[in-house]
Image 1 (tube, rainbow, N blue to C red):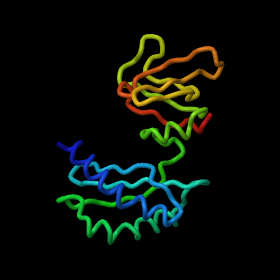
Image 2: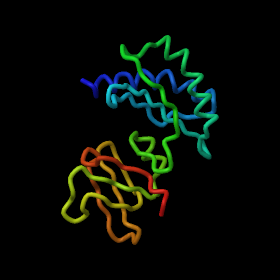
Image 3: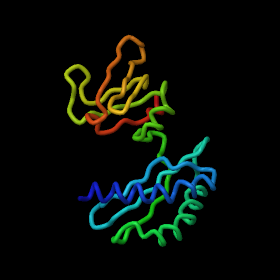
Image 4: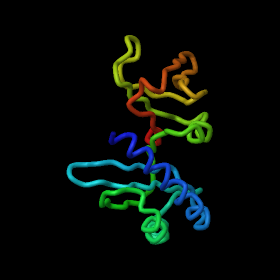
Length: 159
């Protein structure tokens, strides 16, 4: 129930947030509605070329307040957080993978693979709806894994 509720809320908020972000020169990277402890959090991750700063987050948060009050996307009280997806941003949507073909990524699998283990790094070389292909930095070894088998796939900006 929580995941479907979160998914419905996230998609509803995305539709409201996207044009607001565009008006502010931003893009919506992700929207998540999660329960942590006793509190619900509505997290809107924004991005722009060159990265976002605290002023962008504040402007987006202020611009979202009234439309979210009108939409009333949940029956629960929630805490709104607007932030950058960060340097090690998680790749989730097809457009994320499209944008970062050729970039260094990190993959953390739910269950370890015999040859790779649970964690590996490399260059994102391809993806489709269900899989991601990573080539090691030597260019000699390539692995394709199902996205559903990954706990997360993130940019690796620290090498």
